[in-house]
Image (tube, rainbow, N blue to C red; front, side, top):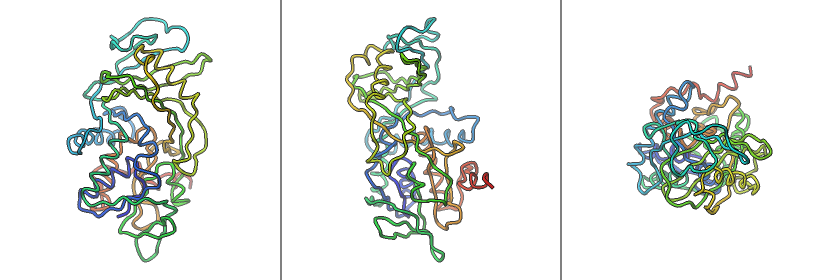
Length: 356
């Protein structure tokens, strides 16, 4: 078995395959969790996808995260959280007072407008550590990590699909493409488009903070509407994201550039809602591309028309949440021929049919 991409979706797929005794080669160009899987917020929600085709996938994945927190070695920052909605302005104050009792550290100009989640329904992981723990656990069960550039699928009429890696064709009983927004570079016209949506984030050294997540309705001094997300982590780091950028997808994760001005806007948003964040030093400025599809749903299943080829990408902002159930379902589909979760809504062929 070959799994292309060592982000969280590829890592989960490799782990659940290896757990079932499948020999796995995980192929990665730049490094484990080198793209969005290492630079995301790691926020998890039980029921925020309810009412959409993602609902059952998210609920199954939320439960799997709790199991993996017990199962994987090391500390990857899993904890349950309370989650709040805030409103804040870069200049001036929001009218009215708190509608929900605010946590003590939210002592700035922001107004807490709602409680969005409890420890029963929201949680977090440290995304890079979680992905690395999955890869290490897969390797402990016999998986191999191979560094190399996956150039394209190599469909064959008389055998399962292979992939060309650094000019060499590798074949196996099955191939999984889990390369995030770069999946289309490998699959070409075999799959519907997968786009890269660029976003920025910063991390702050704020010290120990409560297990709270904050989603902020924010206006800059120029009147720009933003929706920063603030996630304190158990190690004293606070992660803030929420700046979108239409910049085109580069050829590799190594070529992603960071706009310091965009990151500064995020740091200022944190400073407006918390004096602790105002005093904290910025430790990292980051950018990444999340994979998105034309209908907003992931591609999970068989690559149309190619024997032995599978795909898992396009999870958008819910990649960290939904990776465990995606990897588990793909392992079932590959080994057993069917998944216990209904994957019809994520069938890669659906967007091709929609064009006919």
